[in-house]
Every structure is written in C-alpha cells, then in structure tokens.
Image (cartoon, rainbow, N blue to C red; front, side, top):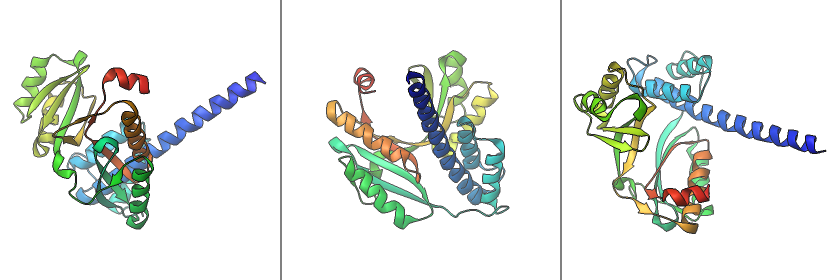
Length: 248
C-alpha cells in the first residue's frame, strides 16, 4: 500500500496548497472591494486599488475574479460591506503586534482575535497600546540583479523617497506614504523591476527573540495571518537567520 500512502500524501499537500491559495484570494478580494468602494474602480486613478490588484496578481488570482471584486466595490455587483479595523496586542517576550483587519462582523472578529493571542502566549491590547511604535511607510523592493545601487538611488530619491537600503538580495526603497505612488511611478518609468511594493507599518525599535520565545512568536504570527479577517500582520521582533533556519 506504499503507492496508496504516497498518493494520499500528495492529495493532502495539494489540498493544503489549494486551501492556502483560496484563503489568500479571499483576502485579496476583500482588499480590492474596500479600495474600489473608497476610491473608485479605476486602478490608474486609485492607488489603493492598484496596490490591491497587484497583490492579487502576485497570488495568481484569476482576472475575472479581480474584475468581479472591483465591480462589487463600485456597486455594479452585489457584495459584502467590510469594516476596516486596527487591532493591537503583545506576543511572547513583549513583542508588539499590529493587525490590519477587514471584517463584515466585528462581534465575531474581536473575540476570535483575542482567543488567538491568548492561545499563543500573548494578549490583545487597547487602541494605541503599540501603534505608537510603528511608522506608516511606503516600501518598494527591487531585485539587485535588476539594477545597481546608483541607478535605484537616482530613480527613487529624486522622486521623493527617504532611503534606499541594502536588504540582502533586494534594494529596499522607503518613502513617506504621500510620496509612495510618485516614487513607484518613477521607478517604473526607469524600467526597473519591482518585486513587491506597498504601504506597511515599520517598527521604530525591534525586540530580539530566540529559543522557545521565537517559536511561540512565529506560531502566533502564523495563526493570525491564517485568520480570514486579518489582512496584514506587523510586528517588531527579530530572529537571527541561523536560528530561524533551525526553527523552520
């Protein structure tokens, strides 16, 4: 029965992969709906929508699914109304965690998030408890094999970027939120490949975690990312690469 067992394993892995992709598509669709509802259905005129569509394409979301999500946001198709909420809390070792939520039922989401924090050694905080430790920034990643540092600096800083950082295999361009779209357009105009781009919350200080604390923090973050109503998880922990590899 070895062949049968192998087939069961393959089916299980495929089902897990499909489920993960389906969950990612659900989150992308929500982001598209909310962005289109707030700023209209034209990605060229609505940066938030463009970013949401880019994220959906990166997840290989079908074109017709993206278009239907836009139509739900603009009211051309019937859709669910989502509320945007920020939740804040602490993980093991005092790690600060900031969550971006899109939910159609706050009364369901709040206790579920609280339970996830408690289950993994953390606790849900009050509004403002950790947000002060994060800065809203635009972030653009450019593969190093696509451009040298001087080219990236020239294209981005002149357009309003704050900094260009050596981030291993990538150049990481940081921008003020208001300048993000302008900097991205300048980088695209320079024909530089963009690996990923978006607005994010960057911690002003980080906490180094290791050992069991690192395992617990990663388990909490994974559980939060897996929850349907959570769009993004921001945290201020750092784990040494060598230890991270051993945990994985």
